[in-house]
Image (cartoon, rainbow, N blue to C red; front, side, top):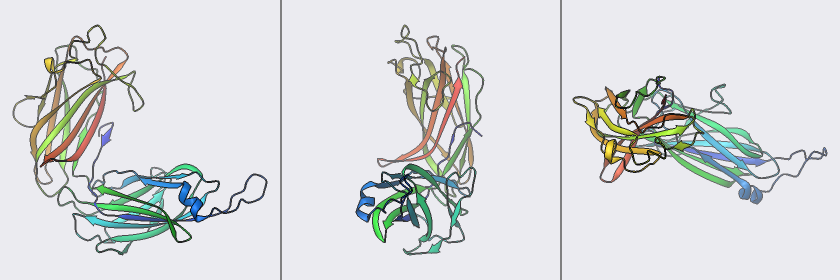
Length: 337
């Protein structure tokens, strides 16, 4: 399994209703502070759900963020509504929802689903405390159903109320993962100038429908130091060699012969930018089928390797009639020396 694996999932209907009730707080002098009024809560309470695709048969942990700028925490009641998008009516025995502070350490508080209130949807409630300041909980949403075709998902709506009055409302569409993409972490340095370095990806179609016309969006760049999420993006060549490309060739292969990635390698890389990018197409995946995708790069003598880490970002997409759907994204870092 790759070191930085991005899995995408298609989830299309859902709604979450949050009901928040104010409570008093100790002000430090032993005297409780008065509870906030509903208008006050409406002014300083915010919430959001971060989108994340759901792999079939596995849970997705959706960051559920609060911002409480008031003077007191709140006892919050959440009512979740999950409704289908591009899929049949949801069944209570196929879906599970939980709320936790840390999904890695604990399973969290389960939310029991019931049918409705909308057609084909599910709903459930639970209570939580909303602390002062910024905080994050996680909605763990999972389903054991098979994904028939790309585009299936759910819509999640969260509505917050205090004393029965709405003070916040948020909706987020969540997709089921249609394609998984795995790669092996590369610990060996990039090969010397003029020598190919190869990266291999194992792709799997998680749907029961053939996926054709897939495209690969490829980006190659360099990060400062040993890399990581906080590293700065830097040029892959030194200032003295700024007119030279960092890679003389970039190619891809799904089946058949190696083919160049348009816009990458050699004279197509004209500027000393932190990243070079290109798009290759097309290839497909049979229903629930697998495919090996290979990328190879040939660095130039102008590449600056000291105190830098390489990064390769592969995004699988499908474009049709001006619309673009992203199926998977894989980010990989590798040493340059």
